Amino acid sequence: MPCPSLSELPPPLTGKTGWPWTQAVEPLPAGTWPKITIVTPSFNQAQFLEETIRSVLLQGYPNLEYMVIDGGSTDGSVDVIRRYAPWLAFWTSEPDRGQSDAINKGWQRATGDVLAYLNSDDTYLPGALRWVAETFAQNPSLGLVYGRVCVIDEQSRVLRERPVRQASLAEVLRWSPSIPQPSIFVRRTAVESVGFFNTDLHYTMDYEFSLRIGLRSEMRFIPYLLATMRDHAAAKTARDPLKHVEEGMAVAEKFFTQTLPPNLATLKQQTLAVFCLRRARVLSRLGRGAEARIAIHQALRLHTDTVIIRQAATVWAMSVLGYGIIAQLRRFKRWWLQLCMGRRT
Image (tube, rainbow, N blue to C red; front, side):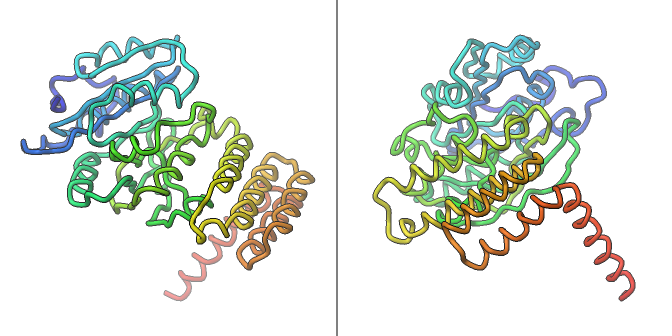
């Protein structure tokens, strides 16, 4: 179905202006646009959900299929969903087995040529669906595309743009750089070739899924701002950063148990070393310096190239001095560089 106009949707919340409250994308011309299916998994995030829904519906895209799969929220989310039900292909609110299960429920119903999911605290930016549709249409071999994202706070203020670039599968495997989930779109045939999300994963399902896609299909970065990802205290990765990294490491270890191309198979030690250092960094931030130093030793036993050694030294200093002091030193360094640049000019 085509996206609704701004005037057709419920009025914006009091005090809300700009995208996607009082602004919309100009409707795209009719044509043979690929059908895009978006699924929003949701659970008790009513304060963000309406903004997420509107950012999808106001894309002006002529061939959209949108679903909201709620896990049985009790915070008013269902009332929000009902207000937008006329423009949803499907919605439900019932207990599920987590985010992966909710996404799979939606994707199993999907009829789109391109599939994506957008969490209920993230948003798409204007024109996202057009850029994605045109990229897939012009490149039939692509299995997955991803783009640039901004990080926003609870009030939807932009904090920063997250660094994203074209990455090889080896780089994606090491999370350097990682692919920002809100900007991921996948061709339906690529999904059919690898299957849906692993419901045993709760933090890194998109990482594991991208690895499966990358082994079979081409993945491409497109240099457009496609989405925002919200940084807030209630986010899963903010609540449990250590579980996030540890689950990612388990995914990487399992990845190397299969038969891989030689250029990937030789990366096991380096990849696991990088994850050990990520674990050490999180432990340092949590004030668990002794455990962090054990993880650093594990990393150096696995691999000792220049990059690993340099990162290990940084994390070691963080584990001894504390994350707060390191952060202050970095702020001082930025201030000093800016001051020096000012003197030169």
